[in-house]
Length: 247
Image 1: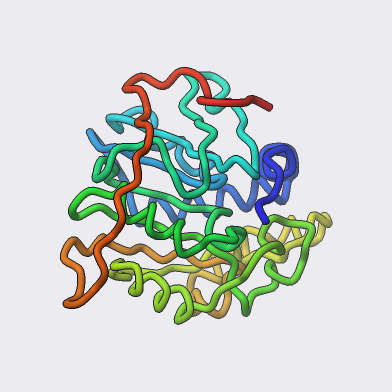
Image 2 (image 1 turned 135 degrees about the horizontal axis):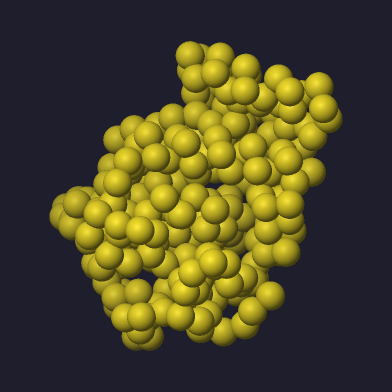
């Protein structure tokens, strides 16, 4: 079950803990993908807080938000690039995405199989996807006061096995969210120290979330069933307003 977009927005933009979480995740993302010049970058779920570094140089940035979650206009100070979409029927042409970020999309989906199929479809040859999910061994997945306490948390092996079944090749993984998931002053003051020390520890153990970077495998294994081709709408070249709905 997807979280409501209002709750996600309040957490990431209106709470100190959420802003710290946003900074931790974005810092890790930029370490993995320092630039996207001339590329098409898409996010699904509630990935918008992480996409801002690519707005200036990317050829195109699209923030896809699933219908059960709801949509918000984003970014607030620029032409809108957010789109309300069906969870497994994205308005993007096949093979047009160079980089894809999925945050609060996979672990809360009731159709994870179809979601991964759709992610594979929109990526171009050599395209990269970054899946960000709660670490089942971390503290963040045990507290429902943050978005990481909802849905299905993963271990590294569980996620990588699932990705391989959908013709993704896991390449790199890193941890994030090393600070304690509390907005109390004591823990917030210690956040920077925990983040610094946590980076020296195994990410799959220490982090509240982990990121798995995977590339698209173009050639399916021998004997794999042919993927069905559904008729779908494509996103207009210059997106300036959500396809449907606003919050």
